[in-house]
Length: 287
Length: 306
Image (cartoon, rainbow over all chains, first blue to last red; front, top):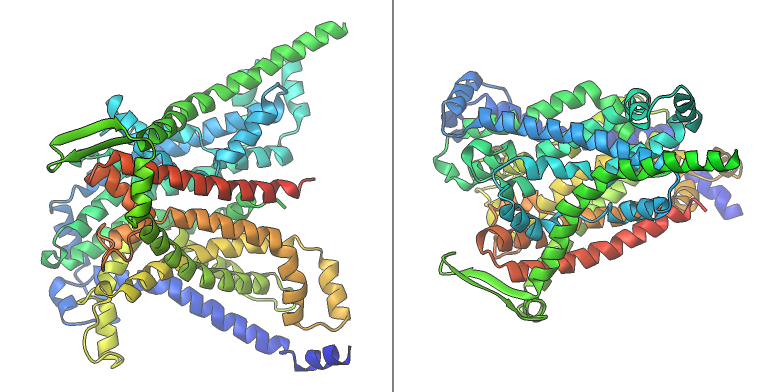
């Protein structure tokens, strides 16, 4: 007891602890942002300037690097549109159908309900990579390689998105509302589309962002599916850049290409960061 | 009357099945069939010799493929590479996340600019891992800015080839995983810490406990379920480590295959060497490991509901 009391005397004061906390926070923020600062600086410098060493001030060659990249051999506009198309379609399908799956489990009472719920939770953690071998072979048989179908359609069965929607429904979708819609004579499908979906908007927005970002960033499966240059998404083009004999390459272009690939996500994030950060906590751990 | 009502409920409830159709169909076609076919592959000898021209198999070989990946040491090497890089990244990740989470949720500290810091530390999690890896590759290359800065400040006397040294490549991969994931972990742990009953902290304060004591005696023990959750989901994520080392080393896992992860090896068996038998055996191995880990997560997350 006495010992405990002395420890309190020796314990750091609030001011010291606050100072340490700020120091660590600033250090960690530095470690997160420093690389993007270097990226920004080097994207504005010419290959020759970079050869002469590093300067902390940006140079004036950004537009030159950009035009060189656009007129170069990498099909970056194709890559951008392919990435956008796949990510947007995946976000739309995944959120719509996951909400539907969650609705089925949340609202209805049927024999296999409990089994299905448990089953979906069990497969939630199984990574797509473990079935990739059979997946690629099967897509080959179906003649779906070099199309976007194997990248978009499978997102309909997204256990993690389902789980989030189910959690959200428990707090935001009273069953009385569904009953009321039935009494008003609305069909089940119309109830779902007309009443439930609008109510789920906040959850759908959060999950749409996460699905968009994860598909935008996805490299493993697209690299195995998309072999045609016209179909490639941005991560595959990045890998191609790495694969090329990069020393011969104009480094200014490499940096601009990296910036080009991550820029859209950073913009979305800066606009939506409040909802995204809140969404992370809601999705994964139950209170 | 009662009978009529029941039949109406039954009529509604069949919609439960109807709304489940898209999920089930897509799951069966795009995940279940591939899973079965992957397992099937693991029992067959099936590869392409002479640079992909000569197809060998598929011939049934039983557990031959499993024996091969275990006895030739590949599985052990790539598992330990993956685990070493995961552990190196996870230790700083969990320590920093616990600290930041405790500080963010400590009302006596009243930290300012919390939203700014949370936004910044979560940012790397959303960045395209392959682009981030490409960035680190260029930054740490022999002509890159990190070498320039170290030379200009006199820390290094001559250029250091980060990409040719096993320790530095593994450290870069681990560091990137740490930077990409500690923000996510911080937010998860914060949610857990905010769920702890405030009266416990108040009681401890009345008893004269220091912040360190509160952290180790109250916060940490009560966070145990979430810590287990974070650790196992992170381990499952770690087993999937691919984008960063793949791009960083251009798929070689160099130097000396020391950064070749399990999924990089799988990727090789699917795309370049096209050894479907070995790839299948490796996939089944990964499936079993992640299956066991998922069961543990499942146990931990459902137990709390009771």
